[in-house]
Image (cartoon, rainbow, N blue to C red; front, side, top):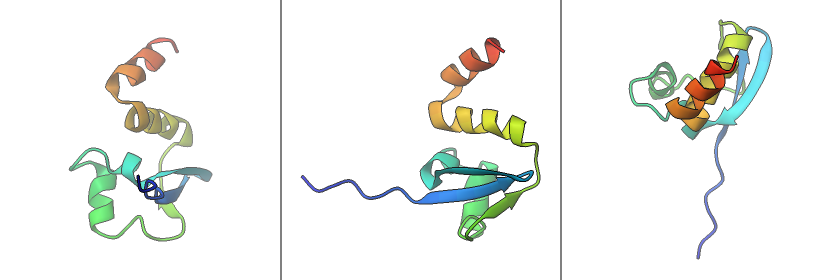
Length: 78
C-alpha cells in the first residue's frame, strides 16, 4: 500500500492571529469563500490574510473540520 500524500498546509493571518490548517479543510465546500479564493490562487502565498475576527474564525474552522453536527453541538454548549 502506498503512503498517503502529504496534506498541503495553509497559514492564515486572521485579524492578527495565525491559523494553520489543511487546504482540503478550507476548500471542502464548493463555492465557499475559501474554495473560490483557492481557484483565484489566493491561498498559495506563504501567509494569506483574512480581515476578520479571529475568535469567530475559530468557529468557522470547527465547522469546516468536523461538519455541521459537531459545530452545532459545540456552539450549543457555549
